[in-house]
Image (tube, rainbow over all chains, first blue to last red; front, side, top):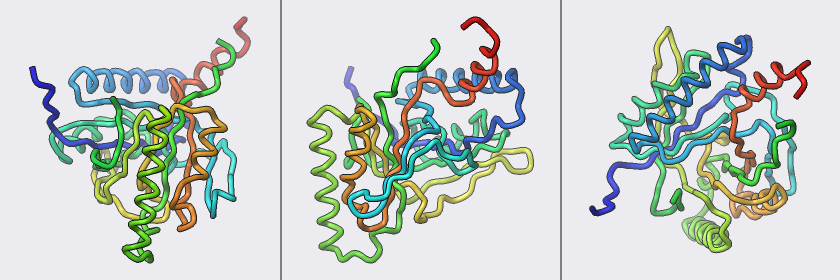
Length: 125
Length: 134
């Protein structure tokens, strides 16, 4: 078997760290288990290569030589990135179909789909 | 588990997709060469799990009128132009972020710890553990 690589690489960025506000613990748990099932299915289909949540803690570095450092945790917002998935699928339409399945969408999350360049990048192995 | 271990994986998100507009082709070439050398060094040091530039195309999916709807991705000072996923300590992540060759052109680097569990579930567990023996 040749390890032929097919399809194109994309990153899904999940935006919105305040989606769970007002939800009960049960609703959050339900959404998260739907999310886990979704990710497991994409992984077993060979479409998801890697995916992780990001902690709301962190830092923002800017300015010449990174002179300005702002420490988190950051205010939860609709725009903040909450996690990501690296995909390999046929094309942008296929990536879009997957993004539309995101369990956080109907709670106000949005999903950004961006093609990535593998020639200029690294991994994941 | 009471306290989660300190994360050893960090994502660096490079913010700003318009920083190169005022640069000459030579300057841009210089920055890109420095950037690739930087990534090569970090890779050789075994710190890179994954790293990619993001194309300035794409889509945004959001929920509108009861259905997922797609709109175009727009470039901006805040838009993400690329990322590094690194296996490093918190201090190293900060040092590496400060080395970003595009900082002086207005790019900002957001450093985020990778976690095994999303923040929402952390909150659920914390609420449930209040008053319990753990």
